[in-house]
Structure formats: C-alpha cells, structure tokens
Length: 158
Image 1 (tube, rainbow, N blue to C red):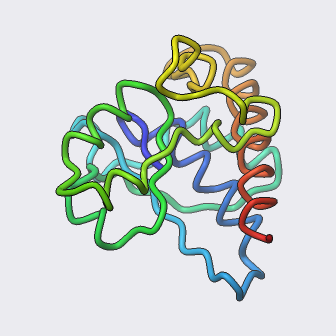
Image 2 (image 1 turned 90 degrees about the horizontal axis):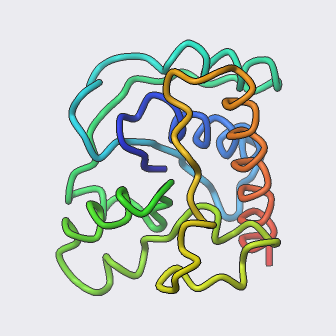
C-alpha cells in the first residue's frame, strides 16, 4: 500500500488488508505500506487515521517508511492511493515487469473496476488524502478502502 506520507491512507489500507487476510494461508498475504515522500519516516500513523481503523475493529502497528525501488523485488502487488503516488512509483520501476505490479487500490472496487486508470476518469479511482481533515473524512476514506479491499480479496480468492 502506498500513499504520500505513509501516515493516513496506506497504513489504514494495510490495517484493513492485513486483518482481513490474517487467517489466509493460500495465498499467504504479507502486507506492508510506504509513502512516496520522506516527511514522516519512523513516525506512527496519524492519530485520527489510527483511531478510525481501531474503531472499526482493526488492529495494526505502523511505522512510516519511504517507498524504494527494491520494493518491486519484494512485492507481488503495489497498490497506490492516487495519481501522484502512481506516477512516483512508476518512475522508480526498473522494468515493465515491475510496472505491471502497480495498480490504484480502488481499481479493485467492483463499482469502479470498469474505469481505465489511463482514461480521463482516473481521478474516480483515487483515495483522497484525509490528512488533518475531520474524522468524518477519515471514515469516508475507510469505507473507500474497505470496498476496494473486498474486491481485491474476491479477485485473489478465485
């Protein structure tokens, strides 16, 4: 999971996915998150983000880190939150195989799966950054993430 600062969206998405796949053995899912910027390296999640996922029943421990090109070799799937993250991650990709691992998380939302990320509708696939907004905005972010994770899990279980 990749967002900008790795303190709001990507740790929230990692919390959802890791909790929902904790009992999976095939395929085994190992979840990590990172940010395209170095602003918050080593910090925990944004307090409102963490409170939001904990209120929803998810347990997750987080320390922010920056996405690096070696992540392509350690990951089968790289899920980004918005177009800025997508561009920055793609720029670090060493080859086409690496680029083929990168998707918008919301591409897996069944209601949005028909949207081409390269089309003018790409912005509908973005998870907006809730940084320092109201707790309601964080709740909306969680709902977007949960829908996308549900779709991803359906895809992985086939």
